[in-house]
Amino acid sequence: MLPKVPAYSAAKAAINNFTQWLAVHMADVGIRVNAIAPGFFLTEQNRTLLTNEDGSLTERSHKIITHTPMRRFGKPDDLLGTLVWLADDKMSGFVTGITVPVDGGFMSYSGV
Figure 1 (tube, one colour):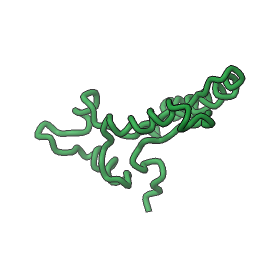
Figure 2 (figure 1 turned 90 degrees about the horizontal axis):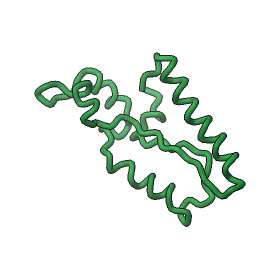
Figure 3 (figure 1 turned 180 degrees about the vertical axis):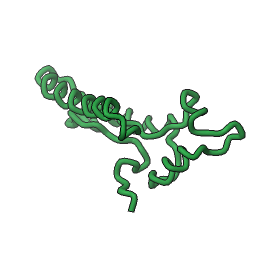
Figure 4 (figure 1 turned 135 degrees about the horizontal axis):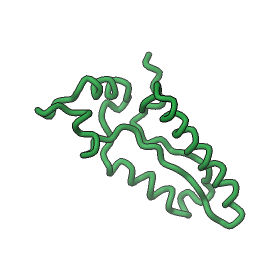
């Protein structure tokens, strides 16, 4: 998350708003529209930003983990349950227009 970067924050808000807008306009034709908002996941794309050469966590990583109640980075498999739930019409057939955070509690943490 880059809360001090206006363009990043605006893009996140736009995705949430667009998801809601699409959900409203697609409901008449039976299409549900939802989004998943992943938190911090350690991947090959960001590994050099989040880990040092010796594999230890960077200062930035420590800040992220400190503000994540589950005290870890997400793993790609952590997204699967939410994805399957949203895709299954029997389990979430009346769910549309939401953005589900899969972030280990990061967005819920106030820092106190």
